[in-house]
Image 1: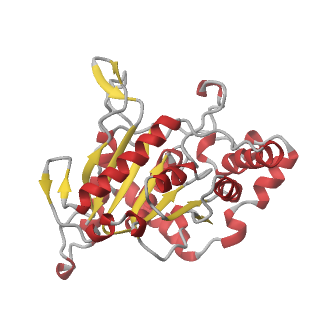
Image 2: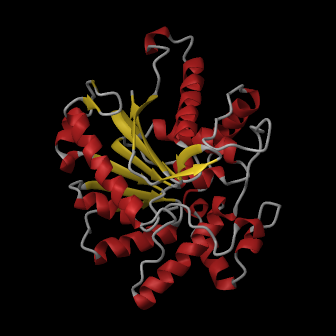
Image 3: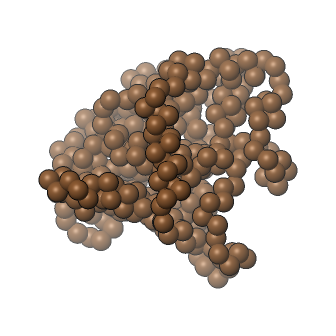
Length: 337
């Protein structure tokens, strides 16, 4: 899931019901490729994974979380917190088929496929900005409020070559290549599509970055047992939110990434479906859920936020809509306490 890549036609052409695999993939060969590349076939489903889904659903059903305030005006008086705008981009079968085609084109013509909906300029911006953010953190400086702080990962940020980076939903892995050019070397990309990982490996070797590691893994049911100084997300949370079970899966997402970011590390989310304020509110809702779960555990330091806002990219082009200024894409960094 390397960012959101919309179909050629406008989304209004999509059927009103959630698409089935047959709707998404009509070609028999691509369907077979998608089936054979399903991460479920490699890992299967575990009781723990199913229980996490049930627990997230229960939290969503019983929670009373404030709806995120959009930067743009709406004709709806009250937003429906349970309403989910689904899309084929929320289904793994779509990505399996898409990367099967990209991989076939690469093997036949050497093409790397589409970059992503964000474009090359956004990826360049994210890579450079992330490097600068790490350098500021190595000096104990928070650019957002011009304050000083001490991070448990400050030593790692002083030497980018020892700073571990995980790219969730890496897709073709090109963001990791750009990070490698910035000086990062402990790089890993994961994606639930085996076709994406195969394509990313081939492109990395072709472009001279054989040191980048790639692994088939689903962030919602991750099998990774290590933590990273920097965790990148470029469109993965967007795609998760487009699934019919998006609200439940987003809760699972925050729980999972909280276990992947090292204490004092950073989570960098780039989104074209969420505003900065919406991402901040979603992180705060996760913090509230965690505080509630730890209320009885006094020794755990109940009340401390898991993620807190660190900074955001301020150089993206802005547009005016409904009298409000905003951007088509946002990148927000959170500090893992």
